Image (cartoon, rainbow, N blue to C red):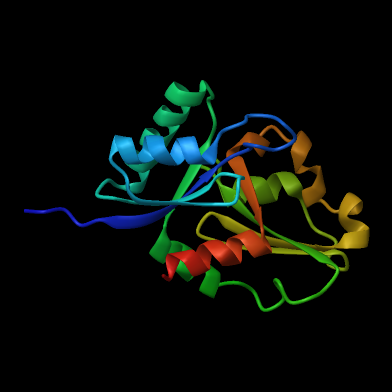
Length: 183
């Protein structure tokens, strides 16, 4: 019996930012193909990859992490989501998200074992006049007016112990990944 291929979005946390954790996306793409992933496609240089595999998402996560460790000598968190799930998540976007100008719009992908509930408990109550958030499927939609970014609760997550278990994408990148999943 032949196994069915699934299409995944792989988000590599914290690479190629500010000269840290540098990974050549072309080289990584080559290594993923050699390893056995199919239809490997990268999007921009910040750790966004689409792959097809017969493996489940946990095995894809382990395999990509192993390749990064072996080829780049980096221990980096990886978030993996099926394309069909990412599309469902995109259809759950709140009405207010990605609708206004001069607003920072981010999607926070929560890497297990961290949970959205833990993140929200650590963040605390938001000031709704400057920022909003909601979540679905381990994904947090967040927006803040640009002029209030430094006062927002979510801007403070850099100093939280759980920050290494989040990978963040802006609205443009999120929307492009959803678009790539639909092709």
